[in-house]
Amino acid sequence: MPSDNLLEGRVRARLAEIASAGLMRTLRPPAGIDLSSNDYLNLSRHPVIADRLIEAIAREGCGSTGSRLLRGERDCFSAVERRFALFKGSERALFFTAGYLANIAVLATFAERGDTFFSDEYNHASLIDGMRLSAARTVIFPHNDLAALTRLLAAEDKTTGESRAGVRFVVVESLFSMEGDVAPLAEYAALCKRTGAMLVVDEAHAVGVYGARGTGLLEEAGIAADECVSINTAGKALGVSGAFVAGPAWAIEYLVQRARPFVFSTAPPPALADALDAVLTLVGAEPERRQRVRSLSVHLRAKLAEARIPSVEGMSQIVPVLIGDNDRAVAVARVLQQEGFDVRAIRPPTVPPGTARLRVSINAGLSEALLDRFVGVLSCALKEEGLCSAASS
Image (cartoon, rainbow, N blue to C red; front, side, top):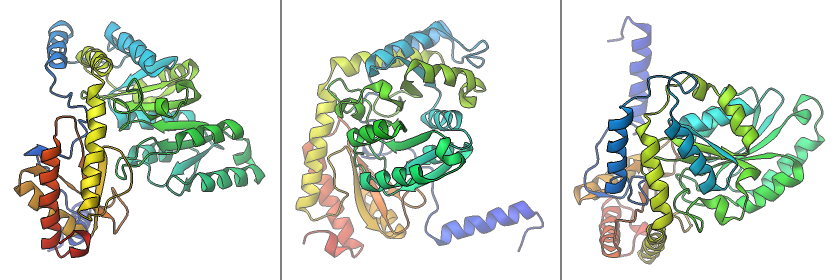
């Protein structure tokens, strides 16, 4: 029966639509071999990091008790920010409670009315939301399409009025979280330099894994950290929580003064700063972790190709296995979970309609033998779902 409560009735109808589209989600704790988390370097349970966290809790307490502009500031925050800036090669860095908040802070704070975002069509929801919260206009360009972006920037130059006078921002992920492919950062940086645009790069899935020092794909592309503003999540490869925005000193100071997610948020637990200080030491001291991630990623992609299982091309630790249909993606994931592999189905709106997939993520604690077994189980599961063309007989 329809509810007398207008909101309840509407929400129940929306939930029914979600269910009928095969898009209902469930909260499911970790179970089985980790092939779905972002703990790429296998650091989240490292004993050195855990010990530093425990020691810091004993010293600082569990909570910060206020925003950093009130009583929430601690010496450990500024210390780890200085260390991260040195690690990244930037003038300054600022620590946020979460990557989502950091992305919103950067985009909603710097952009003003009359400015324009040029945004990759596959950008993460947090980047999209940050742009929506600003007063700037957004132009979406095809994924990783340098030529299209170049044309759009040139077309903007020919326009008249308020938009022409404003700041232009090129907003991309360095490693795309659902595609597992890499942006042409060097080309974007050169284009931004020629056109006067500001490059904003979300390094969430790259920091810790790429670059000679593990600082991310900006380093690997040879781009100076202060040529752009980067957002560097600390809850993925770095294994803890929060995010650092890194860039020139003027940009970071402006965020301290004006970014609402920073000014009006309770500061993170202070102990996280000590844990992240330990992480940065380990990233520098144990490069074999990121080397292991990259070699395992190459191995898995080769095995998938050998089994004729379709995946997005690339070399990263994020390996999407394309299925298409929402229900089939869930069914294949369920088979893998029953066989002890923690793999999750990714469906719209996280990915475009008709591109449901398994998002397989590699971490340094896996082995080639385990990945070989995974590919064998996956091949059988695809056949059971009638996706015979996707897997070899």
